[in-house]
Length: 459
Image 1 (cartoon, rainbow, N blue to C red):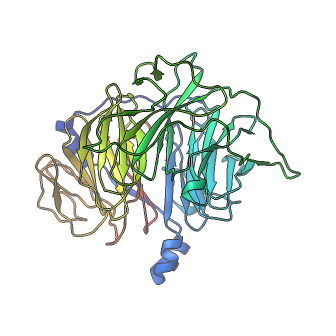
Image 2: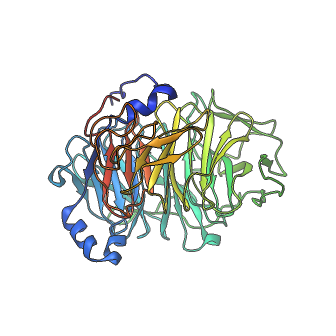
C-alpha cells in the first residue's frame, strides 16, 4: 500500500481563511432520503452511526442503523459509484479499516457478528460470531489484531481479540461494565504488548496492555460456513482494578492497587512500569483515568501521541497529556452526548460530533481556540469560541464573523465559494478527519454523508 502523501501543517492564524475556501460534497442514497422525508421513524432507521476513512483517504465507509454498509469514493459522489456490502442483519455499530491494507474493512453489528470484507470484490472474507450483540471495534496499527466489543447488558460486556490474518478468536475478556469504545496506541518496534485505551460507562478510561502474540494458543470453533465462534467464557485474569473515580476533581490518574505507577511514552508508544511484564494470556489494566463524571463515550489518540481526547455524555471534550496524565483542557462547546472525536492528520486540530450538534467547531489543540466551523443547520451565522466569533460560509466557515448568511458566497473574512446547503435539523454525530488532508467527513441523523473539502478548495 502506497503511503498517503504528507502535507504541511497550517498555523491557526491562517487556518480559518483557508478552510473557508473548502466546498462540501454530499453523498447519499436518494431512495432512502425520500423515505426519510416522509417518516421520522424511517429517518432514524437510516441514520449513519459510524464512518471511517481508509488509510490512504481514497475511500470512506459508512454504517447505518438500517444495516446498510457502504463504501464511497470521495471523488465520485453518485450512488452508482459506491459499493454496498451486504450480509449484516442488524444495525452497523462500528467500521474499521486495516491500517496496513487500503481495501480490507471490518464491521461489527447488533446481529452479533464481526465481518471482514475485501471491498474490491465486495466479498465477506470471514465472519466471527460473537455470541452477543456487537458494540465496538478497533484495529491495531500493525494490522495483526482486531478488538471487538460485545454484550447484551453492561455487566455482561466483554472484549473479543481476533488475530489477523488467521482470524483466530482468542478467549473473551470480561469487562463487567459498559464498554463504549476502544483504540490501540501505535506499536513500537519489538514491543511484546499492545497498549489499549478503553472507555467505560462510569466515565473512566482504562489504560491496558494485551500481548501481540497471545499465549496459551486459543481455540476456535469453525462451522461449515466458515463462521468463527468467539469464546464467551470469562478468563481467569480479570482486572484487579476498581474503575470507580476517586472523588475530588477526578483529574489524576488512579493506578491499580496491585500495580505501581505507570506512564505512557508517546515517543516509543509503550507503557513503562516497575512491575513484572503483563500476563501473556490476558488483558492487563495498568491504570484508570477518571475522565468524566458520567459515561465516557468515545476517544481518540492524536497522531503525535501527545494527547488523548475523550468525549462523554456530559458533552465535555477533554484533552489529556499522555506524558503526565493530566487534563490540559476541557472544552464545553458541544451540545448533547459526544459520539465521536477526531484529530487532524498533524494533530493540530480537533473536532467532535454529538447527538444534538448542528455546528461543528474546529479547535486548535494547543490554544483551545475555535478557528473555524462546519455548519449543519441553516440560519446560524457564527459562534463564539476561545477567540472571536466565527463566520460561516454555507456549510463551512472561517474566523471573522462575516456578514454573509448561511448558504451564501463570501461571508467570512478571506472566505470564498458556496458551501453545500444543509437542511435544518441535520445532526453531526459522526466526524472524521481525512488521514492526510484538512478535509472532514460528517454524518448523522439525516442528510447522508458530507465531506468538507471534497468539492474543491485550497487545502
